[in-house]
Length: 333
Ligand SMILES: Cc1cc2nc3c(=O)[nH]c(=O)nc-3n(C[C@H](O)[C@H](O)[C@H](O)COP(=O)(O)OP(=O)(O)OC[C@H]3O[C@@H](n4cnc5c(N)ncnc54)[C@H](O)[C@@H]3O)c2cc1C
Image (cartoon, rainbow, N blue to C red):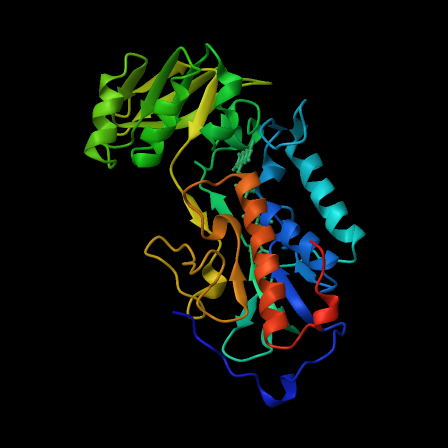
């Protein structure tokens, strides 16, 4: 079910101005910038609120080898700069600041960047998600150099290596099982004395000859200068400190969708992800959703980009249907 918000009187087909746009996009990862590219090429003159930490999760990784079109692979930050350049080439306005408040209760929709108010006839929400990390200095230093939060993305780099996975839920079990395709040994480090993950995943992990489980273990330091060499573990019960040789560490303690801004405005599921209806709908006509902010299943740059494309096409068609976009401007995508 979608809610239809009546336009306010002053909103009858307002023109694009510095503070009013046909389309505003919140977030500048693969989803937001792909939406911007499509929208800009459809003459929607979109504005992207890119965030205080722009360009998304790929900014914290090194090699990206599974984004199509780059047979030799590409560095995450370089790929995201290309996304940004391509969106800008067609006239997207990009502001590197966080949207701090939204009001989707009336049209045009209102967005604030601090005290600065903006409005838009349609909005695409693409604020992504943030991987949760352990919070160690050594983890930050070695991120992308043996420390990762994405087995699908980085598992391939760990062929015949010994690696560890931190976490006790289904994600950790899934990541560990996936990593057995590459690694010679996978040690799952669990803070408690049992898994939280499903029985079936646990059984698969216990049965796998490459997987070993260490209970009551907390990683207190990642050792290595240029790459990961070993992990310092502290037993959460006895306090005993041990060292585990490992060339990789996958942190699988969860993701936090960036949805605080939308509490009370859009529908969230019990994990805090945005709910979508009909592919990209948010439940409010004119507000669309793309990427990891709703997708906890695939979590890939290419799926986020595909989502951004779909959201832009849906936004353009919706604007056209409510008369905000002249039929003549409807574009060849
Ligand atoms: C370590 C790591 C390695 C990865 N490697 C790969 C890989 O090799 N291949 C692959 O396909 N995928 C990889 N991924 C996954 C991929 O990065 C994500 O699936 C993808 O970036 C999701 O895109 P997105 O646009 O939905 O969101 P994000 O990339 O999360 O971008 C969202 C953006 O929105 C901004 N934002 C949030 N709140 C606001 C706000 N209030 N106002 C304005 N802006 C806001 C954020 O700051 C961020 O810049 C990796 C992820 C991680 C963590």
